[in-house]
Image (cartoon, rainbow, N blue to C red):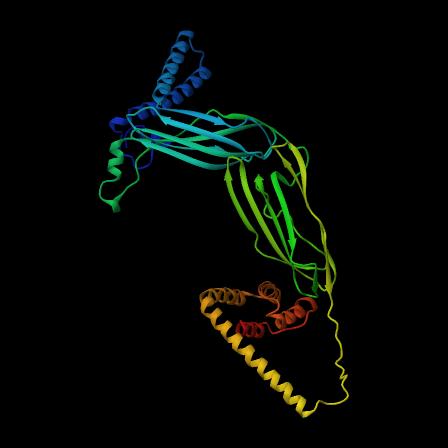
Length: 435
């Protein structure tokens, strides 16, 4: 290893480098001057503590350090950068757009750039775009970020700019030997300092669930149902702003069993913020009347600088209990044989007409939906086999087809709500055959 090589690698050289090429002189000068400045400054401080230096000696040492620092700055002047922000004053969680442009000015070497803001628990940064102009020895890059401040006050935002320097010789060596013998390009990497920016962030004027411009929709399939038959509730939240938490509207109703599907969330970002759409679907099951509570979310719009409330009214659900009636024969005389034959004849004709129509419709639907039905059936059978307990299986059958699987739903409800013992394996087999 050449003298000083280990220190140079620690300052940014990639492990495995074998030396400097002709186009690397600015990199070498920069790293050498940086090393010399660090060591010279440390020696100067130690010397001033250990002894009282003569004024002329002190001036000579300081002049030498200043000269080394000036050479280091001139050697590092191989690129130029520019930063723009959409605003410097904002509310907490209000989107800010940051654009950082960097351009190579030294055309004697090959350079690569990577840039990112440092979140440090005070910011949330999402990269919107990265544009690269890969001109020969004149590389340009434009980075666009969406920033969300998470705290109020005068927040400092720091940055990390990674600059990788190399030359044509190193790139040629990395691609020699064919497509299956490609090696990483040898680069001298350095994280350069970029001036930080200070933003004034105002606190929200109160406690809010959402920040941005949102709207809320709520719907149910009906207001009346039979005992233990589900009511389906759908909640949709949509808007632009700061993305809400995973479950902004938790639902809880005393005495009502709630089955929740996996939320359907769509999220994308642009310069206006996060475009959000979340849909939650619930199946509500009970044996008595109940009320779906009113839904309310407090929101703040940085665009209008005003707060507002999203709400959905309460819904009253009527549950009908089944009434058992004893069968009573109200006819005191039996039908005659002729009346029975006529009734049987009419029944036979109706049956033939029904069977012919049913067979035609069944055959047509079978041909058209064979493949689709097979896929849906396979997904249902898979979920059926994975159900580990009565509650999970009940949720699956209720969401799939409560009328078709009514007998087994009743057995499962008796087990879930009244604690009766059931044979879960038998129910799975019977449902599989019926499916």
